[in-house]
Image 1 (cartoon, rainbow, N blue to C red):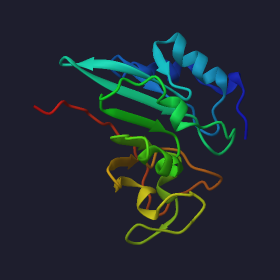
Image 2: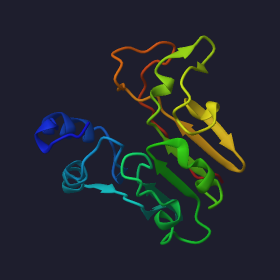
Image 3: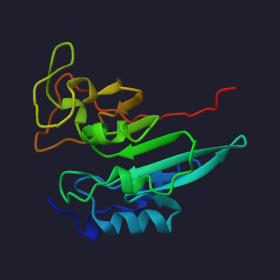
Image 4: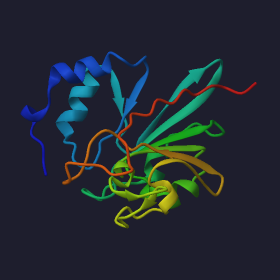
Length: 182
């Protein structure tokens, strides 16, 4: 499944971007095309393609890193994404798929935010994941999780994959508010 530039509803895209405060960061997913990144960047979104950036919050630096999706193009590199990070700054990794959790945890990531799994899309009662195609631990398919010293969150998202329905994996759009601890 490859999208073309004409497949993107630019008006809807602009409306959605208007909901977020600046600075805004983004990454590509497994079905996104480079045109989507170009479109986002023209609208002020800092797209992170195996790279990082820093922002200052209340006098402290926070590194935001983004890693490419590991499945479709196989061009992901957490190490490359973090090569320019500020030493000692807390780091948030944006990763379309949680399957990069092992590499990310070895690179002192504080928080990894992911999607891709659709919450399992079809899960058994109690959140038991039916499919095993996600290449991550079952608890990483939906919601908050912890691996070694890294915290993580995987959003169910609002889309789907091949199936036009969900079972015990409700759609969501997660909004995270990061605050400094004093």
